[in-house]
Image (cartoon, rainbow, N blue to C red):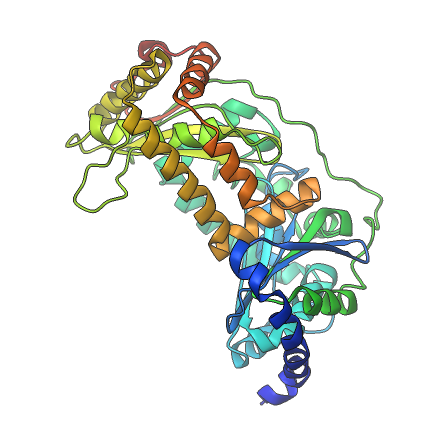
Length: 453
């Protein structure tokens, strides 16, 4: 059995060495929660130190479904994480991580593949080396592709096929952006994914996605100096450019808008969306509009202050409004789920609420509450470890800098009732995106709702 001491002896020495750094940076880190960024041999690195006993470390790669050259490659890259590498078997990786109490995970979004580890603070060297090995030395074997990757993909496809809200949101992105951000998070069960997906194509995509220009290394709970030291030591095998000479497809996103209707027997869901805010161009009005429209209460036993939670109370429809932000585009999306009749009623109330905002008839108190709620949601997302790692890594890899909490809060603080009114008016005058899934006999067309598509 591998002893913990043999795996973590170097880490413990590093932890003692970094204590001096921790004391010097405590005040700044505790007061702002901001990430310190640096360049380590061409790698973008960000870290913040909360001085707790645990650490989260993630590699955020520019390899989401937006960038995949063929359907399914992003999922394949995610599923190959922590499989056999040139130095270790998947079984050895599992056993060593368990002996150290670590947790390993991989996931993907429309713009990123995230490979991450959570562990005790003193084990930073081991897990830094492991993540470097995962992105630079994974074997991409045929048997693992057939036994694990294909099997898991088919299970996720089956789950997606019965998830009506997920289908509606996926369709909304396709209608809004067509290609790129419009690509589905998972290939549909009816798509001919077999001719696009194999271990060789995944390995070729990994060569591009896991090169230095396309990754960011982000840590929460690690001293910046210590992280830079271990990144410099263990990420030497990460190429400065793809070995194959290929490049990512990185066309600028264009918003189109339109309508898509899909019949489904598993439920009913409608997404009504408009152009939103991006990571590189923060619009405080969009965040406040999302809170003002709302749909769900933040206070127990209360219907909530948001316009849609009050308008649809007791109807049985579930409504959520969100500002979906990407590197160069975004969506202000209202999603309604429930019985066909309640979803239709909720969709009508959504457009009515937007028209009331555009007309300037919303109570000043509701606007004040929406601004405060939007500010809390934005700052809480930056403070929460899981979401902040992805947000910091995504902004770092796309723009070379991490979005700061103060900038976001300032944008939201600058929102007024007049700005909300003009923003809502512009959205209604432009092209909307409407995605409808379920009982199409009852669910409304965009034109019936008074939306332009």
